[in-house]
Image (cartoon, rainbow, N blue to C red; front, top):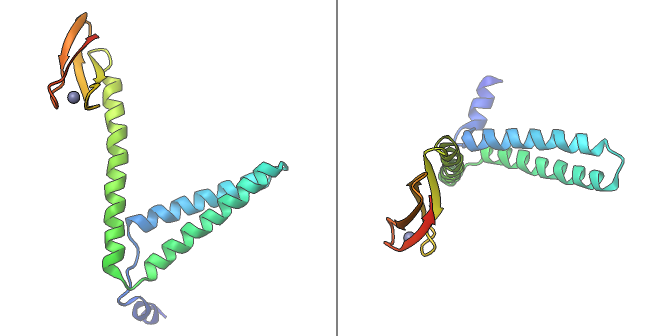
Amino acid sequence: MKERLRRFMEGRYGADELNRFLMVCGWVLLLLGFVLSGFSSRAALIAGAALISLSWALLLYSVFRTLSKKTSRRASENYAYFVCKNKVLGWFRRIKGRWQDRKIHRYFRCPQCHATVRVPRGKGKIRITCPHCRHQFVKKS
Ligand SMILES: [Zn+2]
């Protein structure tokens, strides 16, 4: 049996980080879908059915990815997932950093290039020079 499974999986992509993510999302959405389906309102029933369908799509997609023989395409999907995940985590890290920094610095957006500029807090009205585009604007720090 083990040997047959091994032979079946030969040349197939198998599990990766993206598949684990899809599985977790799928199961969570399935659970939410069942919870919503328990309510009697029509909107909850529709939302529950939609979540259950979506969760099935995610779970089936993750099975498809595991069994797929186009390994390079699956690997590039996994890579794209990592890039996306790092962007999201980076955004949260920046928000957290700003929150911890809020008593020392203020953050402004450059009106010209929309870059974020950090200035020391409590210096009164100051002229800020954007480090990206050299545009100057006045703000109260
Ligand atoms: Zn700028």
